[in-house]
Length: 267
Image (cartoon, rainbow, N blue to C red; front, top):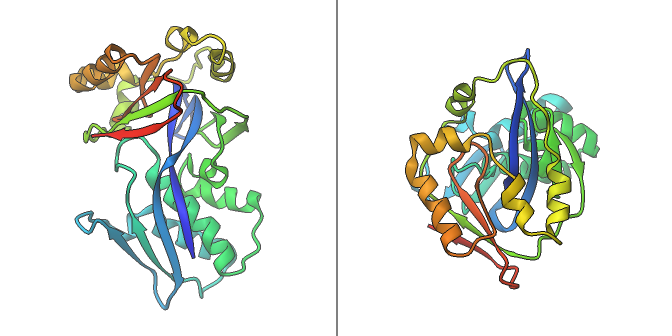
């Protein structure tokens, strides 16, 4: 069984407050990049294994989100016969704020639900997904969504931008844990910005993107890695109507109003 595992970007990102459970409440729009995806293939087996291409990518099997997805699925269903051989062709840059690992986990849940005839509902799959990672539930649907809570509270909406997207793979790894620690959010929530309305309004008013969208992590990460700020600034010099770092870094995306609606990965 084959599956495509797509990447995502955060269009706008606020970290609202630190929760009592140690997680943070966020506010963001999750947008799937349909043209950037990993290819996955699943086959029933006598033991669970993961083979990754290119083969220079090393993994810790038991800490890999694909393996965790299989383990959580077995635990939820109480089935001891769920073993699978996974082949993963990796195209989504690793550790770049694009959700590749979470997407792989979601594709695993969806594929094994079908492969092993588990008949789990989307709500049951979401329950399992949340045990793996905060943004894994999003990838079960893969549609544009306003995300709140830890990222698991999703309000899906139609959004088809009419511009091209360039994604700059900076090859820099930013620790998400480090980035959240540097923000030093407390338990008092800050006011939430309506990112959804900004995006929908931007179809008739491009300037609103640069005026009102932002990513809370940029200042912290750019101070640590100033070359990322330079990439963003260069995108504007090349004519971007909006450029932003996604997640806690380190990829930068830019929108270009060139009438082509193309996607390109640079770097």
